[in-house]
Length: 335
Image 1 (tube, rainbow, N blue to C red):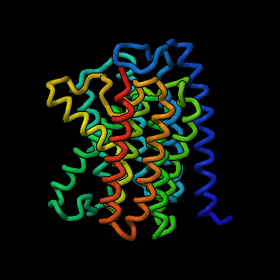
Image 2 (cartoon, rainbow, N blue to C red):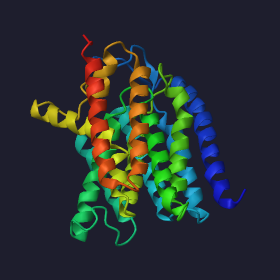
Image 3 (cartoon, one colour):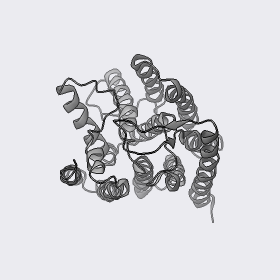
Image 4 (tube, rainbow, N blue to C red):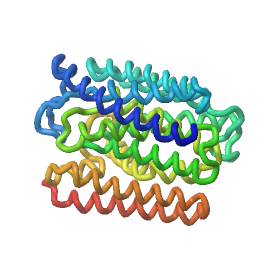
């Protein structure tokens, strides 16, 4: 086996095993310290569950990215993105434990997003020249900050973030290798993220034994958002839009609806499409599998977009709309 395929197999396998094992350790530590997500009016679980799985997933992912960058097998910027993700994890764990003002949280997210955008390749444009270079970077920063938060908003049922992260990672890797092989090694980063998420999934599948917490969902949103921006900067902007399209649609539509109703949109709630679908009978696994099926379809369309970008984008919009309709119909039996 040559070095290319050794890295493509060995690093993800190590990340998967490390994530699985470290999650088991984190679970025991969180139990001992009584760090639980306790049921409330806006929660979808009925018993206290340890919260802080990100303490396992993020260090494993970061270690993989830093190692790949240090070996020269992935872009050097990946090491700094990984370190920023660790800083976000520490910041978010403080929020998990004590709660931070919304202004402080947003400031931290925008600072990390600005750094991530600055670390994109020099001269690369996310919006394909539609905006002047400075505005391109500003818009990319806002988009990354939004992605960080929507990843957190969407982490509301068992298994959903592990599924989304795995599908985004696999999709990004597949798109990159389809035309250019492993190239500059960005695909290794995507596969490492996928594997770290898959290693966490057995612990988080319904009924979850541990939750990610903000310490997991915030930095995962950061690294996956950065990967998607990098994909767009490499010219794969259609794929970068298609792969997370369900997450973008559910979170954005829900946010707009809540703002229109005058609600405090940053507060916990149960009004996302996937949440309302899970409320019906409390079966998170069924909803997670529906989202997995939709995400895999979007992944296939992202591959199709390499050859037929416009047609794939139209089909992806239709698939996303169908996902929302299916979840909304499932929710009709709630209450």
